[in-house]
Image (cartoon, rainbow, N blue to C red; front, side, top):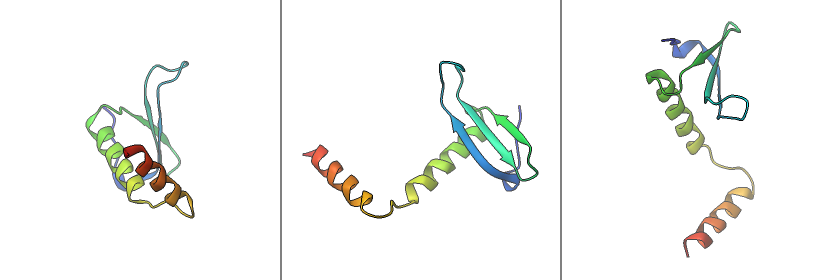
Length: 78
């Protein structure tokens, strides 16, 4: 099992399953430039994915796109 220290992570990238690779990939780039592959089904992989999803949900869309998305969502519920 491979794990990394959270404070050493510079970038986190997730890649879904593709035709060429049947596994979901979670690639972590460390501050020293090294890359590591984490198991997305493992304990640390799940924690990092949940944290990244939470950060994405907190970011608000810029410009008019946010209004358009809200209008589309309202229309879908009616």
